[in-house]
Length: 214
Image (cartoon, rainbow, N blue to C red; front, top):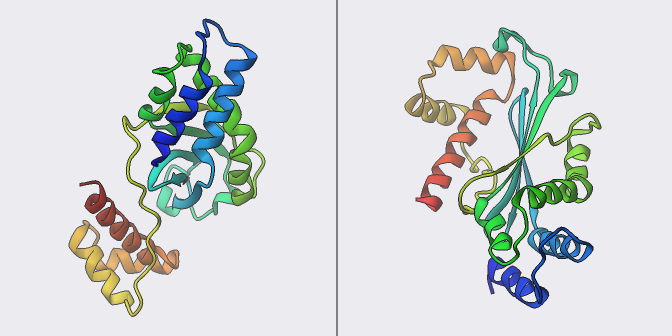
């Protein structure tokens, strides 16, 4: 049984009356729905830049939620070498696929804004502490919740560098698939060790995403 089918079965079992207003029973239903949705989910973390960190949660092969955290950057971003730990937090966004929210709204006549509020509240209490632990910061928070994308997409976990791949192999792929010049890549690598590998793995991840979602 798929994740969505399992959740729909719970909703059919729970909804025996029409809820016209938020109530304790409604809140319990939402909480049970979220507990089921995230039960067994795996969290993946990606540092896009020192100014942005992305987290995603995958369950049963689907990406069920993502969080994007933004941190301040200098006017000249490439000259700003501060690690994320030394940057001020700017904003945080939580995204839940619209199709998953629709699964509940289609069964229960609940106000969408109230459901979004309860999702954010539950996420703050139950899931977001793991993000704070990973970032080793207590000043980060969720400030906005979005219904995005339209449908829960196939989850693509972070890609690891294949065994035997050299730095030159990585450079060649990056040169073929980006506008970077060799001298620029080597300069960035000297200033930020691991830069070339990060760009390379990002390309592999995007290719795998295109393959699975195409």
